[in-house]
Length: 52
Image (cartoon, rainbow, N blue to C red):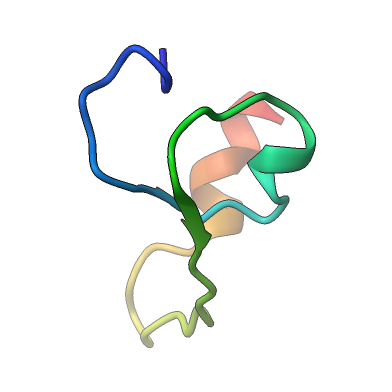
C-alpha cells in the first residue's frame, strides 16, 4: 500500500523503523517524538486495555 500511494516522501513515526520490516520504494524519513500525557486526559494504557 505504501508503494502504491503517490507521495513525495513517507514519514515514518512508529516505534520501529518500518524500513527494516517492509520494502519502501519511496524516499522515507523517520520522525521521533516524546509523549507527555496531560493531567485529566485519557491515558494510553486505559485506551489500549480492552484490546491487549
